[in-house]
Length: 365
Image 1 (cartoon, rainbow, N blue to C red):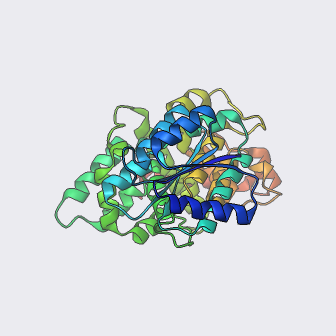
Image 2 (spheres, rainbow, N blue to C red):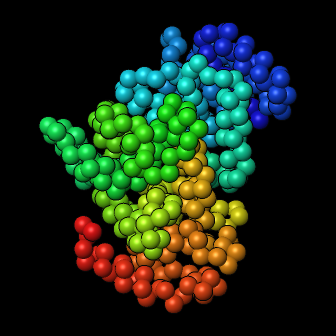
Image 3 (tube, rainbow, N blue to C red):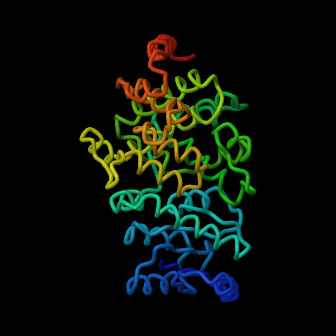
């Protein structure tokens, strides 16, 4: 594996190099002291991972990683930075898969790189790596985004309403959870739902992020995004009902079809487009994207497996099954009856269908 480290402080690079030697990794590591130098080296040999400092002269880390994303989209991108103002945070969110607080422990950094590389082993299909590599921003629902901005701008904005609106949209939820689960804020404790993420970050930080975020505001022209958001929220609400308002199913159901926010994935979804190991392509892309963004792996695994629950069920109706049912029904599809029969839950299908009808009759439930 090719790993590149970029930092204008040579002592930082020396510390990382010492840690690598002590761990005796099998990575081929290279070091650059500027963005232009790094790009020149990448032209000769592309890297699997690029780790860059944010604040550097001539070309900062966000600009460097933007060029890496555009020219080598399969490369994993990690940024090192101290806590910064919302505009810089927004720029990093646009291009980096992971964030590491600076100064950082070199051993912890290498562990993070190792876990990111391990994800590539879970999602080996080159098509998945290609699609995800070029994506760091997904369109929020124009309707939801506008309503959130209005609530934020209003004097004494209602915190409960802001949270409810943010938690109804897959793109907004995923990005806020990405930031909450980053090394800046998480302190090793994984955040599993949007409400906890907002509480963890603080509403003021979230407000500033949303208002400063060009990637939420720009993608307003696609008429399908509002419908995808509506169905994702319906699936999440139904999953919460089926699960008794416990566990990870509501969050996983909200994010289950997040890859369909990518136009290319929507074009392929109707063709039963599969990965090399016969997983639904949009599920694999969504799971890999969420994993790279640092969301908890138990949520990632549910998203990856929800279209084919029998492959991971072992005869048990668990969160994967709940999300499978909720997403299928919310999208006017029939759940896998063979799977439900195998898990002894087929007799519950009429009840779940009635739950869906009740939710559709009371959309603000």
